[in-house]
Length: 273
Image (cartoon, rainbow, N blue to C red; front, side, top):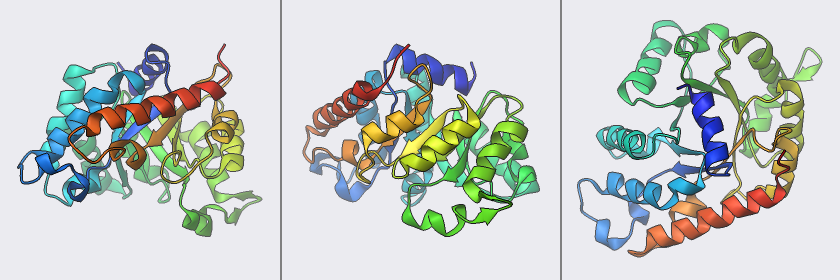
């Protein structure tokens, strides 16, 4: 089953556009996990169990695992999600960007070693830098387009041939790079006007939209700007606001409550066919 098909199934099955970002910071873990060799895996596994019926995807951020020398726990976590919740796709957030043989190795890392269903990729080195990822047609390739951070405007808003650079990326992705129908774009929730512009450029392509949690993106504006005609099309990511909603041994209960509140707030704004 392809990433796009699994994602569409999760949208419908869980009636959800919410993605939980898995950004494990051991300094913020509850006390009972301190000192455990598998603390990162256990923390994330518990969050996944508490929220799996409320989400359309999980998105582990590789830096949080690599910084703790916990890549083995990332492998185990993705394998666990696939085994326990096979209808929920896993997006590896790594924002890889390189050319030729190096990009090919990053593709092997993401899709063969970690078995991710999709990968975030930096497209600013052009078509040949994303080609190795596109060689896995069942996998999702999610390209940075208009990111949620304020500094994104330094580059992404530059005028290029009569349009802004993020618009050029959206056009190239939709018209030239998405021949296998596997691409998606990252467009931040903090820029709903640009989100609406990207939606107009790319049709029903999925949009990974971070920023509705701790970054303060307006859910109503984001859903209205980015949803497709059938009320889907978005992967609305929240990480810290869900992961660290509670700080004690009951953290999973608080994470579930936060995820359910986010899922329900999103659904209030959707226009479903």
